[in-house]
Amino acid sequence: MLQADCSLTNQELAERAAVSPATALRRVKALTEAGVIERRVALLSPDHLGAGLSALVEVTLDRQGADWLDAFEAHALPFPEVQQCWRVSPGPDFMLVLQVADMAAYAELAQRLFTSQANVRNVKAFFAVKRAKFHPQIALPAVSA
Image (cartoon, rainbow, N blue to C red; front, top):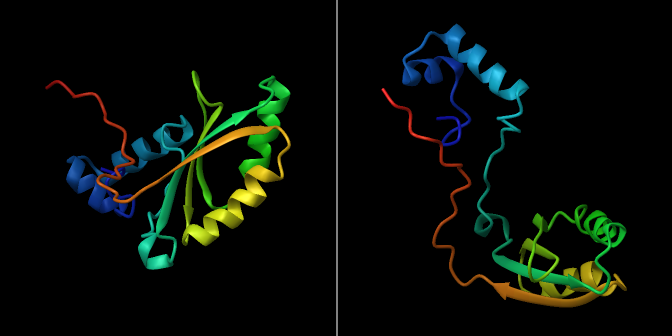
């Protein structure tokens, strides 16, 4: 329920889960302490905020040693336009999800993010033309009765 709407009050959560408010609070606290709940966030509309261009970018480095991978990751993570950064295998070394205003903003970001890194060998960007699904919830196993 919290994956669908983390703004639920404890009372609303308890009612929907058919448990007492104290039980709901205790369960949420236990899930948070166990690291199951990493954080609670609000998902904002890129279109309403002038960040309507999404790019999925493959990045291949010249050198793939641990220090080089760590260095690129440390370089990329502070950019607010980098929404996600994944080390992947096989194929490219990284997959990035970027959110920018437009193509000009992407070009400026690419200059700062990729060209300033001497170890970047190849960048292949894919630009989203339509977001058919965006569902950050994790499927949970079915609970047997």
